[in-house]
Length: 417
Image (cartoon, rainbow, N blue to C red; front, side):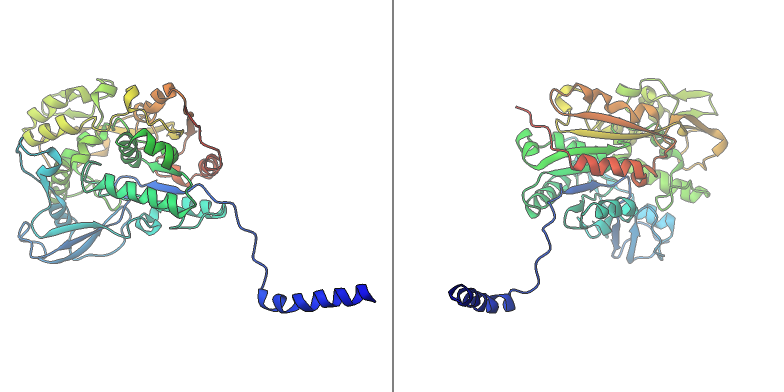
């Protein structure tokens, strides 16, 4: 009886607590390694606002349009108008630092839409969904380091903005180091960030780096785009002289064009990037000074001298010094150059004149294997996985690649003394 009364008293005391305790909380999921994605060339959504512009009299004076690959939003601004208004102005003044010599057209402002959010780079839905299957949540432990693809990573506040994004992702996810994922040109921006941040910062904030077909030494096809142009919305070649000229001039004005062009220090003369049919002369990456001189492109030569090979990666001092899990495609014919009628700006590209070599359909093997030099990192892991037959655009949607990414996110990072 005494025992029974005691138990009854205990239950009576606990009953009010049970009434107010509410349902049991679900078990807490283990924390995930946060991911920050660096999108490909023009895969970041940009909003362009135009107010009382006079640069292009045949175009609307004011309004807005968006600029990004697969943009499906109609605009009053034609493709030619968009090209003209996105063509950067360059003022040659050696007393001014190179990044400060560029400006927008008067009345034009460009901003990243939804910066940091996965909505700013909609192309990567397959990656976001695979990470969600592994327990990730968009805009919490998946974030996007978007950028204006015309600019190089020393411009537009890229470094400060991106460091802050990474540090926020670190703190918002239990002080867990962040894994950087880049696609195509994105790894150039990630690599610049890593090599322009202290090793102490990397040791604290960075878990590792997955470059997917990183365009580290550039690609040969960028040289011909300065003559033919290429439309961002679908990466098609212009079919009219007006569009070819407006697009080519836009590429000539952008410093990222030169940063993304094949670096002769890596490529030498191993591929022809432009052939001038009017003279029979061929140009390799090593010949770029003569190419721009023969074409009368004085400003292009100045920008090329500064920005070709701009993101350093091949010497030991420029190694990322974090764990690297690289991915590449191979086995596909890849355009590296074009046979042109002459060296005039604004030519319609002839597919029968394209010059090919092996690669992933967008970047050649010289580019996609260049990071093999990182095998010499003193301590950190390095791998480069080949994906035969998977093209450049399909790589970040490939199930096997995404499974490896998830597995690598779960690996502890290397700790180097």
